[in-house]
Length: 269
Image (cartoon, rainbow, N blue to C red):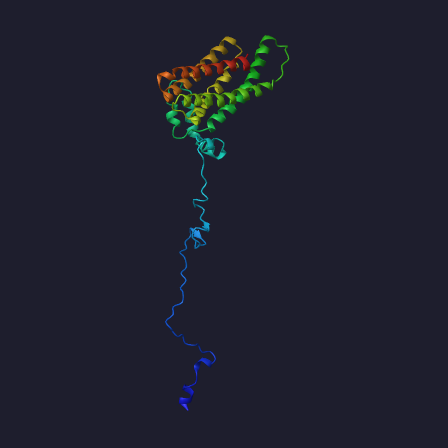
């Protein structure tokens, strides 16, 4: 009886698993491609696709064009680095602009020239010189004739915007192209920075121009203009170098003096 049970085919029984017979033929093996956290899903298509890339992958890296490159000049994001500056650095550069004969301003800003200071200085000077110019006109008219009627001249603001912004942008740009034409060392951001800080001295000195004494006003504006012009000329000479560029340094000095005289004639007549 026992022999009859053991001879039954077990493959027909419920729950039985047929035995695997090795006939010598090996089935193809599938190997999963190497996967990591940088590339998902894994690239198993050769050059046809790259899959998802990590956030720091080269295909998604944001590249800033430097402002010295012509492509970067028209890219706003290339100027963001020139506004990333600490307040104490701006204060040190403001104090340095009050010493006209130092000639080392470019060495101080060489590692990190900024545009925050020049824009802040130019904008502040626009409103200060327009407001104080109206006040000076009022004091002069009241000093000559107390019964004279006076009204605030809004045109001072428009004139200050065009003159100050235009000077701070166009003049450094012109000297930059001139030095490039002469194959001399030049940095457009550095020039904008230096010329912008050179205007700071006109902000506190504008308060002294409220004194209703014409001779003293001319003395103040010539003294302040001379200090600002010496600051520009000394730093431009030390930066550019070369005796053949002396005429350029003299031209920068005269332009700065002309700006000071322009302030006196148009805003503090």
